Image (cartoon, rainbow over all chains, first blue to last red; front, side):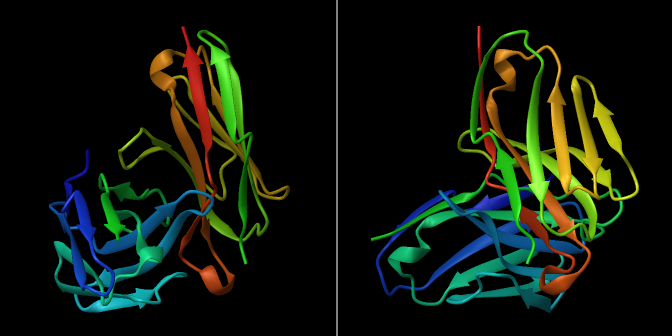
Length: 115
Length: 115
């Protein structure tokens, strides 16, 4: 497995509370991504980063923010968790943004339940 | 907007069979097409990446083809084994439109290989 660690692996939280998920990589890859995976919707991009302090929105970014202060860490924050944010969250990394011959490498996911 | 569709949604075969998984995409402006495997409770593992200029890629018993003009890719698995049981996802890396530089995933094919 590529050196990607997601924490926590499981979390249960209440509606309205803030939640932060962490992705840590040891590969020194430039690009980092946050996806959510839901039945019937597949994998959808939330936010991504193309360098330290450089981030951009994906297709389902409402209610989420991200930060990347170091190459190795990419944080995803749910500002005020809602039940619709119950999902499995995956972090992915890439050295070339997926272009050329550089596939994405995924972490093992964080299962988040918002009650 | 790119849409990626995978057929069939689920497939059950006896061990030893050769099988084909299908992936279609609506926008041919892609950099590459990637195939992933996902085991239950795990992240995605990259299997094959076909660049837009290529027609196929092979890795062991896996062969992936790409026909960009018709918007199709296939993953061929030879001599299937129970260990091949997993969900297989394809994803197109978009080279144009509002999803430029981002992957669009299909919803996957759940493969079961029974002894």
